[in-house]
Image 1 (cartoon, rainbow, N blue to C red):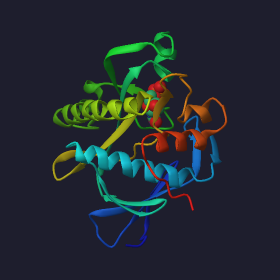
Image 2: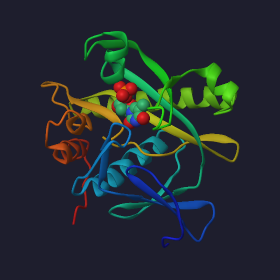
Image 3: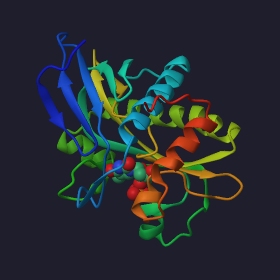
Image 4: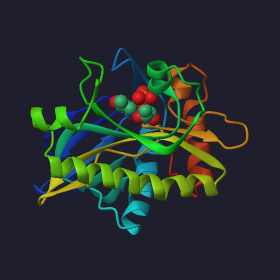
Length: 239
Ligand code: TMP
């Protein structure tokens, strides 16, 4: 399978058509950005790491009964996925408080959230991804009531599977963001799951091993991603 026409360029990935209209090719680039694209840099190997990280996680989720768009790895930095009609809604689950929750509610980073919280955000860089809710999603037509219920249920299922995966490797999955799209009348998990879109801490030292290393200029960004991948049992091809 080869790259066809460029369909979409995101901040870290490019989507290409393939010779099969039901499939698209995702190229994970080395670009990393903060501030909704205000600062962009290249981090060597990040595309390869995230592509292979995502493939590992999506396959595990599929084995656990969660339908995803992932079809196969094409190369170290490219994957073939099902072509979804994406909803602009982002689903965030938090097990521990961090990031925008701390700023919004004045709670301390690391506060245990039981039960885990669920938030919707609108994918919109110009508006800085505002928080939204079920009512706004339905009124503005970003997803139907049924689709909202499906996204929420699947996001919590993903949390159950991944919280355990990370805990077994001595890691804490503090929070994560998922995006869904429509395929054959169902909401299917799309986009990616990688350290770019979640918070992962070492369970003992609470060392940050995710994109917060970039946001907070802590250094060792891809080194953190690789450490997580290796601790989860992945063998990365970075050649
Ligand atoms: P937040 O604390 O900034 O609201 O983010 C919560 C989690 O979701 C964090 O792991 C980062 C991720 N996230 C994204 O990757 N992209 C987004 O647009 C949003 C809103 C969150």
